Image (cartoon, one colour):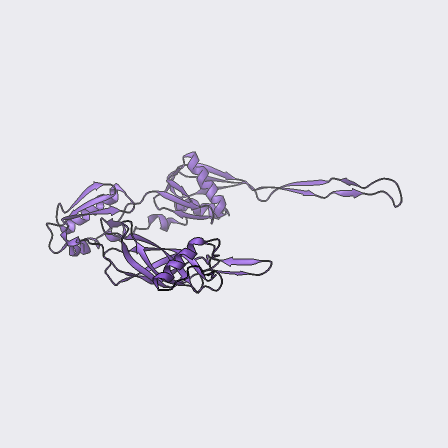
Length: 366
């Protein structure tokens, strides 16, 4: 058995003493009323190579096609029209703030029927509606997909998602959202990660550079900025304020992705005095039955005799790690790496330390 004592002066000392970088206000906040609006529409993708909807299984596709052709002056009532190169799709997009008529936005396209692939298809002009039911954009264009599907008589293979894709710049804005930003007397800055310390630092940096009582801390996620006492329009004032730099406060946090074995560590994580022991016990069971048969032409029957071989192996001697008080998590990881602990074993150790109360940080499992 080997015993290791981790010192505070470990390999990752540069991690724990590294100065946190300054960030701009615009990188950690959102401005109230400056946001995008979701758009959605229902349309048809045409020109598919036999991979479209089965009309009998997707009657809404046939109905939409009939309505489209009638608007174009083609009457197909009573005809047996069953194409397989058309797919019904839902189109989604986001109308960015201050979007003007004529500007283009990206759209996403996803099949809602039993189409096998949208590869090579073209979206027919489709109106995009917002939550108020008004049309704000119209989408049309060739669909780009990142996946494919190939199949034969006995096997098929699918890579990615061939039934969904995108059209870069595929929608043109047809209606603007009326909003006079320069008429505002004040705006609110909403922190993306609410924290009282960070919000207080934002208030102080704005008041220091723009004048006292310009900013007011409302809560952990909101800072109100008055625009009446500053020179220039509201847009000009916000352009200056959002570029002020500060050091945001960080919570002690450990994020673990159990599927990939990824561990992301925060620099403020601390460890209390604790001992860690981890074994490597291996148990192997092998079945090797023996068949006993009678001699040729002799009476009797074959008998199967079970035989089991069980082996217990300890691949390496047990390791005990003695952790000093107030050690940083990077120091702990460096020591565990020296012991040859795998990432997945390290995840189990961190979860157990959290349960024991020795890991002073928020543990986020994904």
